[in-house]
Image (cartoon, rainbow over all chains, first blue to last red; front, top):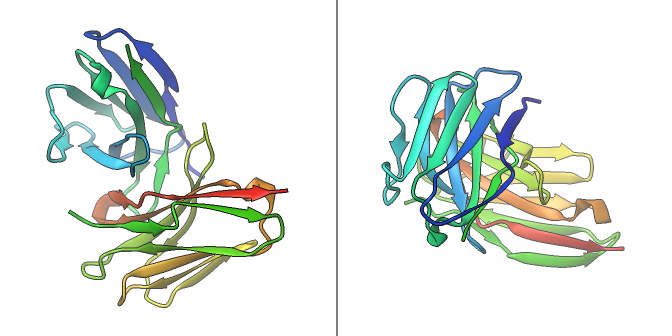
Length: 114
Length: 111
């Protein structure tokens, strides 16, 4: 099956710094990538949808200036958490699609802001 | 906001037991229902994508059924093994691969 690689898998950062998470589709071109967040004991929640070469579409309640998404190519999307705070500590995971019904996931990134 | 619910939240079974869990989802504007198996520190692994009412799919000891009219899907595991221990996620699929997830069912199989 299609492989999506997400890095880093785990990151600890100081409050006020920015963290960049990468999501790459290794063996296919992803027309659309999705970013999800999961707080403890909760569902995976969609944060934003990004299409290559255009601005991301953010879900209600997700600050676009705080969670910067760049989808510069068909194989790479990045999520940057800017000026991170402890409440941004969460599990972030990306998925990539080719336009069909299946979505392929990265391994996820656990972010801890101290 | 789409409401996708899974039950139970967690389940402990003995090796060899058969088990099943439920995913409920909106019955209107149905597109697809996805089941994923998610082990810690790994990517969610796609088990099934189901699109038609009455669909039944099988992969080894795992099978799933779909009822789009009443908005539920069941996942069955026959003869559970310790390696089946994982979180099983269902997701309501919208157009363009966008997914709305349930909270997952965490399965633990004791040897």
